[in-house]
Every structure is written in C-alpha cells, then in structure tokens.
Image (cartoon, rainbow, N blue to C red; front, side, top):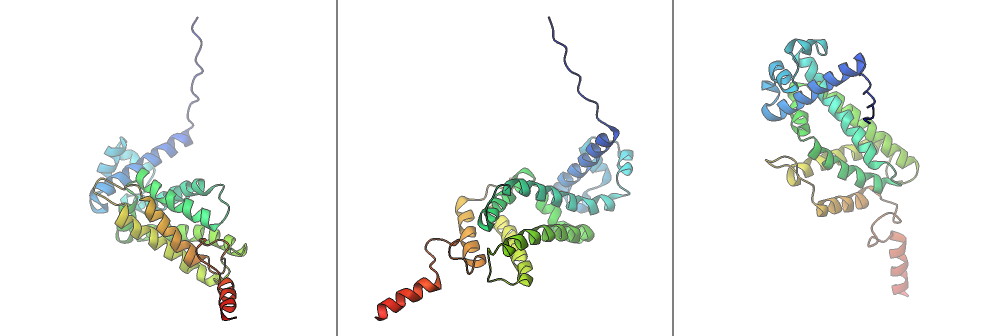
Length: 231
C-alpha cells in the first residue's frame, strides 16, 4: 500500500519575493565577474536569473540601485559565513586563524566576490563605503572584546582600527598572490596560513608571551638569563 507523501508547505509571498531578489543579486554578481559593471546590463542580469525583465523593477529602482545593494549584501553574507567559521573559538589566535581560513574558503565558493568588490569603488562608491563600514564595524567589535579581555595589552584602543585595516590588507594581497588564478580562487596553501599566523603572534600579541610561539621568549626570561651569565 502506497504511503501518502506529506505535501511541501507553500512558500509565502514574502519568501518568494526574497528568493527572487536573491536570484537577481546572485545573477548580477556572476555577470559582473564575467564582464564588469560597465556591461552588466539589466537584460543580461535578468536573463541569467531566469526572470522577466519587467520583474526587475519590482525589486530595484534601476541598475544603479542594484549595484548599490549588491556589495553590502555580499559583505553581510561573508560576515555570516565567517561567524560560523569562528564559532567555538577560545582566543584571538583561534579566531584569527579560523577567520583567515574561512575567508579564503568563502572566495572559492563565491568567486565573483573580488571583482564585484574592486570595481565597486568606481561603479558603486556608496556600496563600497557601506561594505567597508560594515566589515570594519564587525572586526572592531571583535578586537575590542579581545582587548578588554587583556589579549593584546600593548595596544591602545585607538590603534585597534590600524590592526583592522592591516589584517584587511593582508587578506587582499595574499589572495592576489596565492589564491587568485585564471580558473578562479584556489585553496590558500597551508604554509601561507602558518606564515600569516606567525605574523599575528609576533605583531598583535605583544606583551602576551604565554600566547606567542614557544620559541619567542619574554624579555623578563631573557633578562634573567643575562643576569645569570654575568654572575
């Protein structure tokens, strides 16, 4: 006797609208990755999304409106992804390594991201600013929590933003050198991850020899040895 299959629940109007909007944004990212913002026409985007061109205007006022929303949407998607990657980490070292690895994994899953990001500075400057405001705010809050817990006491509060932009830059340039390829983003080599973490230990965790690499000795230990040799 055949069993009755439970019918799938129907999507609400709001769910359908959210799915259509997401499809348009996803299609826009793919088209921009292939031809750039200049040639990413509404016709191309709707064709890629499989949506009637007239439907586009139910979700975006015009092409520029879509461009202005695209990068911040991708940025929030990146942050959500990284939040899952760092869940359960115990200190700034674990957070930074998990986030670093997660960033490059995200690029592999979303190869359009960097072209959308880089060309947005000219094609969608408002989106570009919103994107970095979003990422900077998220990263600053994370570093401030760690700083308040005493994880890198040699830094002043105003210097935390310098750390944020330094770590942003490291990810971007390491992507260009070790991940970017004609076939799309490649996995970041493990030795690059380890080199980056050496930089983090030596640069961020000043004043915290207990969290640095075992080979790095505190100034107090060195002073004790020097004193013993003199006597």
